[in-house]
Length: 563
View (cartoon, rainbow, N blue to C red):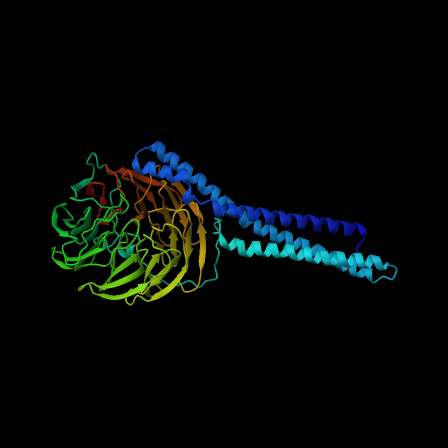
């Protein structure tokens, strides 16, 4: 095809504009990428100073609002820059394609012109040089576009767009309904399997701890802690610690009477040290684990004890003090006759199985990555029970009977504290200043969707087949479509939230740090049922058993039931 001079001039103009546009986008992306490497929300001094001030005065609403505002500004600026890089990669690739197409049209026309006998030789030479110049220019532009689109872009987390990233992965069959949990027993942190789902119906939603309204009993625990209670039949078990004094308490579930107290350090080889950990956390952070025969408790200095339900020490051992900021933090799990321990330290990372009756190690599997402060979760996929750990940077699953790694996929990075949420199809992992991701469990990478707007720093998410619920340290709560990742509703509760939300009785129970329980309907539209105050601060996840709710406050353990 022989184009007219007017058409050729138009082609040259379009090609020139496309080339300049592509180069400008490339340089802008490089500049933005350099900025992103230099700007890290975790190292924002203003934010860190504000958080430190707020931790000293958590009841100050003005400081809470300032902290929320600074945090949101830093988060939005950071992810806005990442979105620019994401969008720029597509724009630059489009510009490069337009440039190449029109340069090709010009080159084809030049070839036709050279075949005409009336053209002068010197014109042929000029055109040949121009063609070579254009080919080199086009190659450089295309190279830059490809590098920026497919290399630089992969270094950044994808921004939120609510879209499904992969839908071709085969859906695993699973059943993560409560296996040993019922409306009586609450054996682990966040309930059966540590999944955040409680059984039972008819729980009271209106109470006031200061006034005694619907408070069945309140007991001042001898020593403080951040662990949550666990329940087996008519007994409540909970840990406490003051410096190196470590204790396990057994209470009557119906009266609150302390039946017996077990020591966490009265055995051969026990550590007598009170570690220099986070001042607020202390030595009683891990939640105990209980079954029909034994109650096992871990403390921050890695002292591990196993008692029977009558208070007799069965065995005790120290599994090695981890070198971490918060000392030992992971809660325990029990699977059949195996006690499961997630061990995280700068010196070693592993998952360990101990014989429940003897305390002897039956298996240990080393893990890779960096130390985290999450807790393990038990879930079943394709008929295989799995220990699932929210690690850094991978989410990994292990066989609870042998410790064998079953699969590992790219997860989240940073200061990882939240545990995973699960339903019958997916695993959800999150940490603050990073992202929330939904994965299909299996040996191949299978990320379904991700978001970066609501990321908790302490509390763990909870999911059912339809919805995923999140509560953050800024006081935000959000509900997602579990399958697609669409945000269905959000709400700001003003006070920060460390306790993990629990799904129970078709409601989501969200306890903030001021001790106010926000009860919302577990649905795609926000409906707040009640906001009930405990009367004191709390960071501990609530427990549900036989129409009663058990909450550990800063000083007391409460049993909430209708008066």
